[in-house]
Structure formats: structure tokens, C-alpha cells
Amino acid sequence: MMPKQNRVLLKLVALKRQKAEQDLAIAQARLRTLQVGLANLQAQLEAADGSGRDFQSLSLSSRNGHVQRLLANAAEQCDLIEQAQVCVADAKENLKRILNSQDQLTAMGSALRR
Image (tube, rainbow, N blue to C red; front, side, top):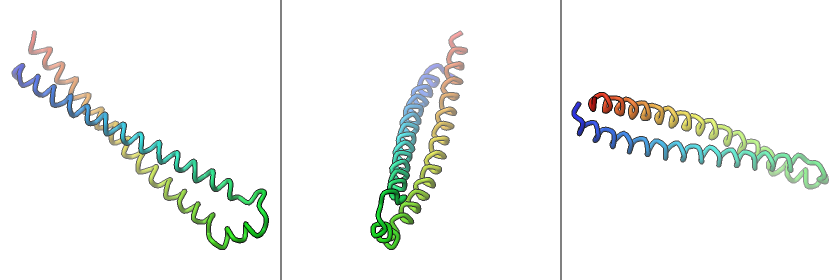
């Protein structure tokens, strides 16, 4: 491979690496946001467990399905977290492949200069 082609490929791979790093950061931020949301739902569930509440407020909460709605939201949030974890793993794998390509191109460039 010609040295000029190698430099061009290195620039392209560097751009791909930058994009992959950004994608990974975005996926990790989304995962953290979802985990915070789940923690908030769990805190709401703990607050709604009935301790310190009178019968009337518990009855009203039960009739309106507040706890069931919180449980459904928490289950949905767990599903979203699982999906986000898959996205983070995919982004890490993509970045790993790109870094490997960059290492191979660097090694090829070093071999050409010898």
C-alpha cells in the first residue's frame, strides 16, 4: 500500500473512531439516565408502600392503581435498561474493532517506512 493511501486510511479510521467514541458516550449517558429513572421509580414505590399512611389514602391509591402503574413503569424501565446495556456493549465492540483497524494501519505504515 502506498504511504499516501495509508495516511488517508488512517484519517478515515480516526474519524470513524471519533464517531464510535461519541456513540459510546451517548449510549452510556442514556444508560445512566435510565438507571436514575429506575431508582426514582423504586423510591416512589418505597414511599407508596403504605407505611405511615391512613386507610383512606391507601384505599384511594389502590383504587386508582397507583402502585400497579409504578410497578409497570419500573418493569418497562428495566426493559429499557437492558436494551441500553446491549447498545453500550455494541458500541464498545464497534470501538474495539475500529481501534484494532487503526493499530493494523499504523503497523502497516511503520512497515512501509522501513
